[in-house]
Amino acid sequence: MERVGLADSEWKTGWPVVLASLAGFTLISFYTFSFGAFIAPIEEEFGWSRAQISIGLSVITITAGLLTPLLGWVVDKLGPRRVGLPGAISYALTYGLLGLTTDNIWTWWGIWFLLSFTIIGIKPLVWTTAVASTFQRNRGLALAIALCGGGIASAFGPSASTWAIDQFGWRGAYPFLALSMGAIVIPLLIFGLHSGADKAKRAQKAGAPAQQVRALYGMGWKQAMQSWQFAKLATAAFLFTVAAIGIIPNLMPILVSFDFGRTEAAAIAGVAGLASIMGRLVTGYLLDRLNPNVVAAVVTLIPVASCLLLIAAPGSTVIAVLAVAIIGVSLGSEVDVMAFMAARQFGTLAYGTIFGVISGLWAIATGLGPTLANRIYDVTGGYELALELAIPLFVMTSVLMLSLGRPPEFDIGAAPAEKAA
Image 1 (spheres, rainbow, N blue to C red):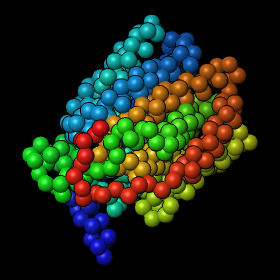
Image 2 (cartoon, rainbow, N blue to C red; image 1 turned 90 degrees about the vertical axis):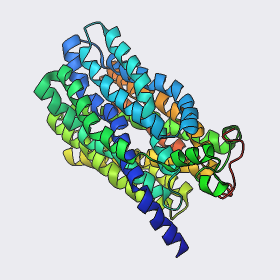
Image 3 (cartoon, rainbow, N blue to C red; image 1 turned 180 degrees about the horizontal axis):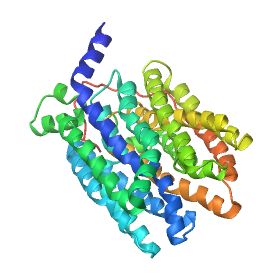
Image 4 (cartoon, one colour; image 1 turned 90 degrees about the horizontal axis):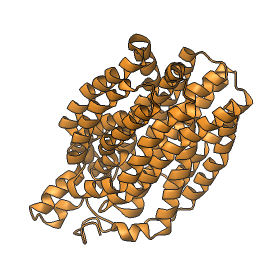
């Protein structure tokens, strides 16, 4: 009864944080899932190779990846609200600049480089820190609901971007999408982004007793990063992301290369987003109730089935929908699993810094994945080899997640020690 009461209390006070984080995840995920829709029009206008176009995505993810550990430290110091809200406003104002690209490819890469300094403020660790510090009993499910923002972006990003391109051209589509996203997301952040970490920071500054800052507990960042658990978790996040993000943003081009039309390919690609929502919710529920190591190992292994299906029957609509749905389920669980495991293994005291390093590797992998997949396309004329190479990466990720041990038992009611050192 006590557990149920605590969980109910968390939801009564914490649901606005989940809603705001859902909006934040939608915003940060949209540019990745809309990227594939812009490849063909840009390739047609400028004659650039797909690998050259994808370098733009690599620029933003690698630059942001290098800055993410610093972002984690800033989030630990300031709290998610004072980082996420200005970050969302800055990003909404600058995303539309991509429409100003000229036939000099350096302008394309340069705008992505500029975007990397605005997108850093809305990286996943901002939203996971907000949720993880607000929820304890139902942390898995709360993270899962917030992370459904990625599923929303995956479900509607390809089709919305294709529609905007058809209506306004690819140049006009970028500012249209930026303004539309900002008008929806920013008011939700103003309303709901008041997390446990933000409240704890205010309580610490006011000299409140330990029980009022209990949202912050666990290891300092140095202790955490010296552990084998951190090495396993960080490696798993990197490997899985290289494989999965090499496929997901390229679902439209992959399907088009299998002779599907652009509209049909966009619709099939959208299935991944819908499936990811279901995957996140189910995974979040199971993480709170079953052995998280086993749950994580299973959800990071199932994309192998998607790769095998796409390779075996590249022209079948039914098989394509099934394969996209399967990988969508797993993609829907990835961030949830990694964020949950980081909080479970290391606590929330230095969560921003710890998860910031993991997210930095994640961001670098996000940039490498699509570029490698498209380079394979440029060389081989297809994506089959990229799908084949992804399989062992998914298997290694699953083994690493399964090998994580039991977490330490933290004294949640104790006063935080040494802040985040």
